[in-house]
Image 1 (cartoon, rainbow, N blue to C red):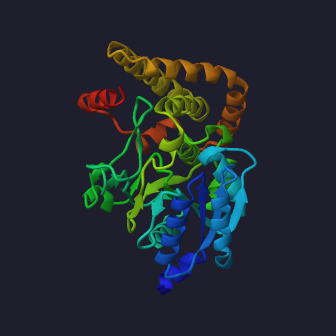
Image 2: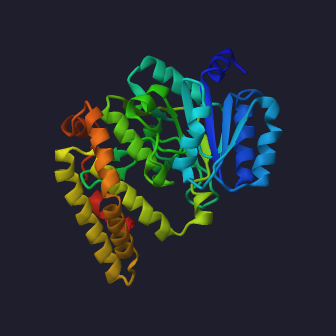
Length: 349
């Protein structure tokens, strides 16, 4: 382990959530230890209420490495499990890491160096490479940060681009970091009041968190790092149908819009988003599928049930914000060309 990595290991906490995937967790932790030359930084493993004996045994096998282990009292998904494990992370720079990540060369020194030189950088994503066994996708970039569009969707530079594409070589401010591996400055959570909303489960939680961080004056960045492998969707695809995922995803998007946007954002983004959802639903119905129609109908109905929670969350978020929608959009909003917009609509139908 180099002296630089030795300094890094004392400054980061690694938070890994697990759900019936002991094999992935072991591969992740072992590769993490190897990337640090045989030592582990402070590492927290959270069993997401599966009561998995294999996960418990695995965590116990790392006891000599000082690995902390916690079991959720109920299933909370990525959001709830990270919220549960967050208090166990004692270092200044916790890193949320998916269990389906594999490390080669540790990426955290590059992330820390960037944060040290950019004191307003509160959340940083590193370089992710897709490795999930899917032909034509393996070895491509998992995206290099995400930008907001006027339709409320996000567009991701480098998504499925070759691993050596120049887009991955340059640091950039972005609207949101990808949740598979990102570093958080501890004070970001303190200033936003929370990490994730528990009920978001596993959908849109990192985008909402990044949005709230921007509003209170922090910045979100993609930073080039030694790449790590990500078996994209390796866990979620085993337990949830696509319709289950989309229902909660679109509900959470709408919740985030209602609580994070000011007047301009609600007037500009929300109508275009709903128009896009209507067009998506209509095109699917023409093709004989009602999934999008059912999905959005369910999400809107759920939003009505969350009316009181939305009002309270909106009051909290808006009372803390120091950055207007106008200023934020200049930094993180990417305009679509009509050709790009049509491609997005087709991809989602």
